[in-house]
Image (cartoon, rainbow, N blue to C red; front, top):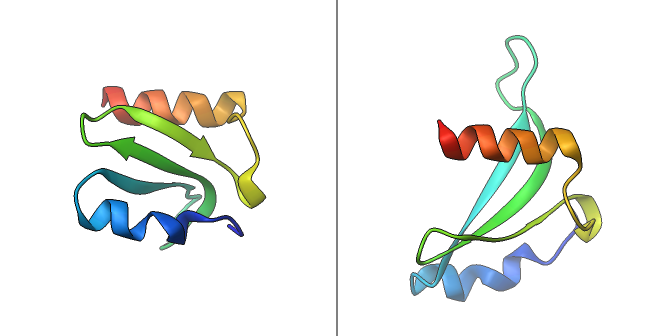
Length: 72
């Protein structure tokens, strides 16, 4: 996604956060289109969600997908 997620490796290794990827799959695709990279802190709170090239705030459909995933 051309952003700095690799710099979080040490934080993830010590349990300070976890990094997740939000993908959109269509039909029988094995791997979908990457939409967002999401950082969750040790308390389970979403700290940030970034799109391609560190694009800022997620667009509406991405926010909806994050909420649905969290609620589900």
